[in-house]
Length: 258
Image (tube, rainbow, N blue to C red):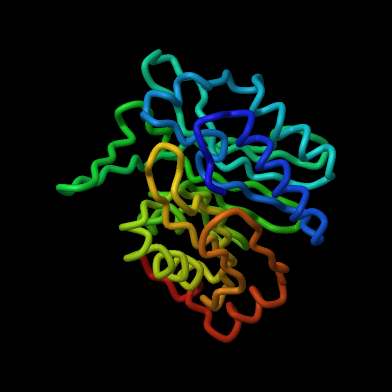
């Protein structure tokens, strides 16, 4: 996606992409971080914040999951927290009945500063509790993380054996070009699991350019599908036998001593 500054336009775009994925056979769809808004200023997230369990964005995700009878990983959206000047950057998972199955609040907040670029998520976002979050989607155990979390491998180790990591993101062009693919492939190789990383990718209304390259990576670290930039879908089939095979021929997870 290339989310903009208008909530309804972003939801309309997300609905179109969800429909495309379903028409191609998807029963799990993941949206990128900030799929609902990429505002001109960080504080603009406060204008669309919702209470957990209510609001236009959450109703949209629930309705889409129920309508298409799929699981949806809702990228991220701003949820209300007790501190009025901040929000949580929250990922919600919905099941085919439209119920919210899991919530993860981003724990690592991105900060980056050069002479040309400055970002500091802590200006308006409160970090979540450090609790590794997993949820079962059918027979698959899925681990949840957001964007900058990707750089902290200990988070994923703490989840225990998992089948799929879903990491919605909005990497900057600069950091994405340097590190995005190698980090995703490393997390897949280390945990011997699939990694699905839906990403913002292109030039946004606010002038920011995101790296894109939405990826699905195999447990062997191979890129199964990639969308370099723009709007579209990344597709692939998760094969539990491949996960087992990789762990049998290279039992690195069982060789851990720390």
